Amino acid sequence: MGEALELLRKAIEEQPTFPEAEIAIGEIYFREGALELAKAQFAKALEPEYRKALQVPEEAYAVLYRLAEINETQREYGSMEKHLLEILGSHPVYAQPDSQRLRTAMLNAYLTRGLDQVFRLYRLENTGFALSAYSKLGWFYYRWGRFEPASIMHSLFALDILITESVAEIRRVIPSYEYQTLEDFLEVAMKRENVRAYLVSGNFFRAAYYLAAATFAAGHPARAAETFRLLAGSRVAAGDIGPYRDLARKQLKSPWVEPYLNPSARRIEYPAD
Image (cartoon, rainbow, N blue to C red; front, side):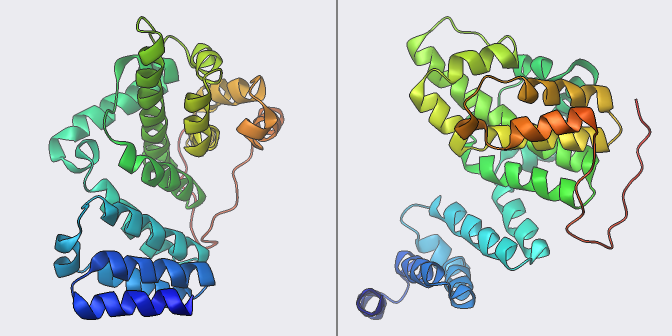
């Protein structure tokens, strides 16, 4: 660690505004568990003069994700949310005021006609950078008691991005492929190694579980049960689906809402369907 730090510091002496070196130092501190030092380095790399000097501007997303990860570890949830929302600020569907119509349409399509209607009608293309932010915020808002629309909407967007990218990849091999149902999609997708790896690394089953959990908590038990049943009956390998098959089966038998991250948060009561 010492030698690497010394080399990076020498590089910074030669080129004072060197955000990549600042990020690399932050990564060293992060791996060593020096989280406060890591945060300071990552924050420095995001200062305007450093951010403008990035050779690859999208590297800023990786820094924001790393900061959010540290915030979560330290239970600094407000800062975690702030950093994830900054990432989403670059996503047109999230950031532009006129996109509210699309968000509302997707939410209504899901609640009234189900997931398959959403994934047949809407595609969020070229937005992979925002995937983890949507997924994490879907979980976070659920655990903060902000079920509808916050948790539902963010988990829904995460799933849509995963399916959009997966369908595009499947069509490279099967040009005529069209999404019909989530069950059929998983049957095809999980047989293709690269698509399977993408869905697993993108936490597809976690996002689906928390979408259903937030949907139940928001007062839509019948809609939530559809996704719980899909997960509970899935033939996806245990190592790929993780704990979410068993959790879904338990939810179907006796639904519950997970404890809040903030014990003082008050649950919003929604009218049940």
